[in-house]
Length: 538
Image 1 (cartoon, rainbow, N blue to C red):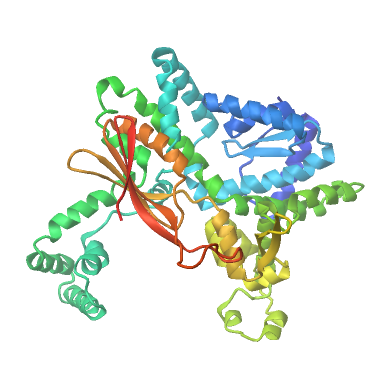
Image 2: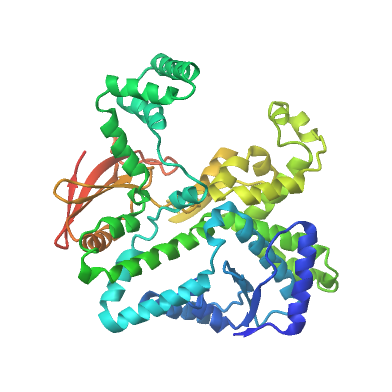
């Protein structure tokens, strides 16, 4: 691995100037390295962060990647990491003209990293430098504690998707703690008192009346009235306030670090920095996982737009077309985030330019009128820059995929059925509706399970899976609960759901085309002394 030549660096600095002229915003400094395919294989398990802490699973991944490479040789074009300054790697097999195109792609990524609000917590420090200090810490602890360090890493990594990512973003943007007025109207009246709409509106009117009559202390007088009428209000609010101020109620690693008596014993406190570095590493990569379609689509949009106008494409038009098609072709079956994201950005730019992203356009029902609608605004680029700044994948997909986009690119949802005569799977077009396509894409996105955390009177840690239609992966439950029990230092319970197919009387086998009806049953998993029991709750 070595830095790119001064000749290549000069070309890339010229690419930065053209990108800035087109409207992209990013810091001046960047590092570019030329690497071999072997380097890519070594760095890939560490998310391309050379200084990331060592762990045995990474070595297994390297061996797996090497085996795959021997069977299916390939040349990764590039990768870029969100550090300060950004670091990008280029394959030593790339010709100069290809590196120019790739660098435009990398600039798109860097612009996205440094302007998308979901990356805000990564803007003020260099993760590569922090990872190096974490790596040294792990090496030091391994020399003192031996294999126990790897046990703690394994237990922490098993639950590192349950981090309070959105709680952290909220705190960065001045998220305020729960106030008594908010609790009274948003929680107490609606959930505890079960007020009717008329009763709720009546309370709002009384509150507004107090504010009008007593401008200085109207809110205090209103709350005093509430406390007299509802003696339990104060204690209920205090309990809710503590929960709202503790992001650990959804962040399992943070909760364990704060509340585990076992971890906070003097002899076990060495485990806390290990858990914290696993947690902060997970938090750092959360936005990249949640913006894959946006990020790759934005970079692909700009590498095409900028390189097509670059005179260095001359003589390489066919080569570029072949490589670009491999990267951005829309598959008939499956999902290509590069292709989907790039086409959505181009579509949104066109729609905004024609004034189609407006209330007036949405009111038009006639299909011919919608197709011919054109009220030039000149706001296309401005709109997609706003999308780049404020959206993540789930918002992007649910907001902007519509029937016009699906029809424009002839998209559809594919399913399969068994051909009993040939005993093979047949793939068929299940739907061409935007809602079905949107659901298919949304189901493919990263969505870790939502949980709530509580502690029982007997000091049992109770984790409740907030069921959203997808069960936990059962094969992992026992090992994960064993790790949580160790970190908690006591009995641990998990409440979750499992599917139970419904057998209808007189029906031996459901038709292949129809999904089988499913009944969800709630189970309690209990881990005590490294032994798990499973009990049906309801």
